[in-house]
Length: 79
Image (spheres, one colour):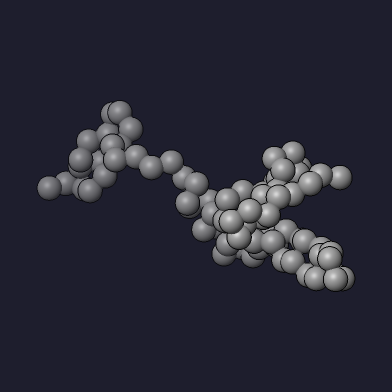
């Protein structure tokens, strides 16, 4: 069991819990009130193929230069 802290309208979950759940910034958590002073929280994992593709594209390294050995013509065809 771990203690989370509510401060400035945000719920802070301890690092060891975040790491165990694989939480990253921006992930969604579904919260359900289960009693007067209790709730359950479930991590929402979107596993649709479109979402997986988009995440892969967003994680791809950005580069402004082609790899060594390429020339403009290799990329854009003869001028």
